[in-house]
Amino acid sequence: MSEASTETSRAAPSRALRTAGLAAAVIAVGVVGAGIATRSRTESRLAERTAAQSTPTVAVIKATPAAATGALTLPANLQAFNSAPIFARTSGYVRKWYVDIGDPVRAGQTLAVLDAPEIDQQLVAARADLETARANQQLAASTATRWRNMLAKDAVSKQETDEKVGDLAAKTAVTNAARANVSRLTYTQGFTRLVAPFGGIVTSRSTDIGALVTAGTAASTPLFTVSDVRRMRAYIRVPQNYSAQIHPGMHVTLTLPEYPGRAFDATLTRTAGAVEPSSGTVLVQVEAPNPDRALKPGAYAQASFPVAGASGAMALPASALIVGEKGTQVAVVGNDGKAHLHTIRIGQDNGNMVEVSAGVSAADRVIDNPPDSLAEGDAVQVQKTAVKQ
Image (cartoon, rainbow, N blue to C red; front, side, top):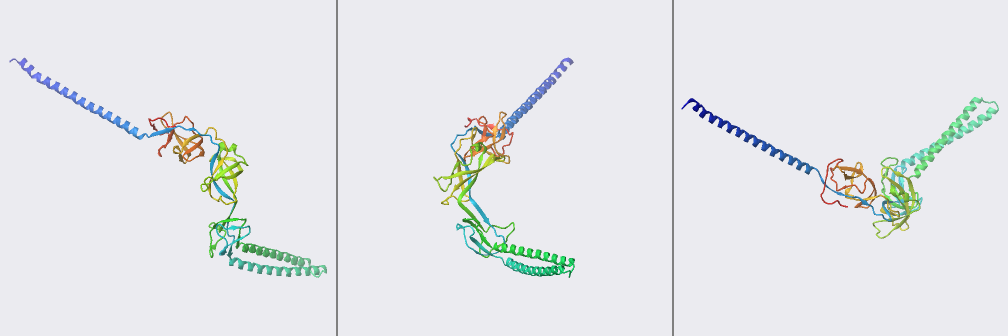
């Protein structure tokens, strides 16, 4: 065999090995590339799934025009026309009390009597000081009179006479001060009798015989409360949208849960005439006669005003409201797919439905039952179901 044929036979296996190596490298690169592509698709799908799960799915509703009603019903708390907490004006011990809760009283009637021995002794000492001052004044008066008479006869100097007259004036001032101190202590001693300032009923009693009463301190509590319940009043906050229809003399109907089916006629007597900026309401006062004492101080009532519905008001379920530091808000889904918080003004609260006078329109997509963690600008996903009306 020639040398050329031998070299040719040796080169053939070398080319075959190189070809096999290249094929194996290509296959390895393909496998690695396929694995990287598969992992990239998996991570992309996982990221999309995670993003979808982190975006809350919400149900949206549309605000509807509030139904026009013939009356505006608002909450009210009844108060006695006159109510006075009775405090002690002097310290002492309760000797006796004469009335209890529910008892009728007349103006000036004694409610309780206190023992104040310190005041009694101070009054005795003050009266003694007054007697001493009066005696000194009388002596100074007689001395001044004698010196005036002697001055007329030139028996004494004018300087000495002026001194005696000045001494009389000083003693007179001391007497007046002692008399005023006696009057003060006499009045203070009179405060040991607690009396009713007007006729009414006793609505509270917080003392008993032997109890120590300390007057003039921040911790002092009223011993009694007297309320005149012959006529009742209530302060009510009326939304601004209805304020133009509210006027003194208007008849208002009061209803109470303990008297189903019974209505009490009241008259609007006063209006503040100004809108409170924080609530957007006008404060009004209504009064109602109470001949049978059916109306009780502190009772909850519903006040119905005969007014027309507010124009432009929208109705929303209470479940759509967000109450926080910025007031009452609703979450609205914008065209960018994000939640935006709108501050609203509630015109009337009907329990499960509220009447919104400002802050939302019929075109807004309001989120119902918004998540507690929902914040301004958060992305949301709207349910595929039809929008609830």
